[in-house]
Image (cartoon, rainbow, N blue to C red):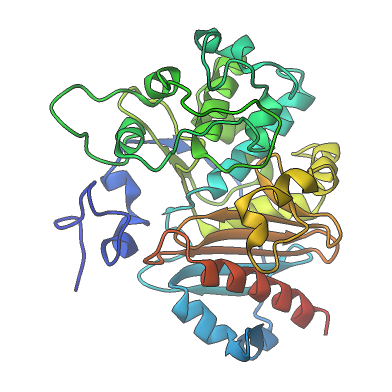
Length: 379
């Protein structure tokens, strides 16, 4: 079935086969604000390493070839860097180097880095109360006691599901239900009733609303929109090659939790900043904190720790961290991934249009694929 703008809607854009077109054309479905590139891009030169087309990934009782992994996981684009240079780059399904593919929750990791930059500038402290920036939440049973650190590490105690239609409509990603007016994203957050909420600081519990609230705090702390912060603090300093974008709700609020749309080459550049310990853009101390300061006990109490190969990890500042390997991973639904091995200076950025939002097999295979890439590059 062919897909185009004529048959993709807010009701179906995140499902296959429509997502294959929609994920690289989000701006035709949802309002976006531009994240601007600098006048001159940083170099991302290199050439293919032929080893990377001819290896297997161990999985269960059989191996899966790298090429089959890319195909079976509905890969739209993949870029691998070693020591800062491209060693592998492929595009599929109508994507190209300049495609602005939505990266879903990899957006969280991008704004986690921006939080670190703002912290180093004295604009905020991660121990600051959320209510310092959003006093409207002073009486909130969900977020009234939370700090920015609780939001960054997914330990807010929020039990309100972010998988409901009302939330999706509020962020501008789904049509509204009923005939009443649609709330803005921030109105929705402020109106949460807190049913079942726990004290902050407990187990890791993944919830996108936390990061959308973090974005609200960043805007209040600086007086700038998220797109402006991403432009001035990340995209321009790192030498992005292409403009990116961020989805907006009806009130023009950017979505920190999942709305960034970017070239896979620039997503790889974000990873390169991490591999280079911040590269003068992100504070090196923030990178080291992400790697080594995550709470493994809080992670172990969360559901992600049950995934094969994810036991012993932590979640710090919107990144999955493995301190022993010095590895950081950003994951987004439908197969988006940015993985960084700081020790071996390897980065893998991958965009996809998988039919399932969170397929356990594909998540585990993605991690194993990246680690096998690192091994191949040591040969």
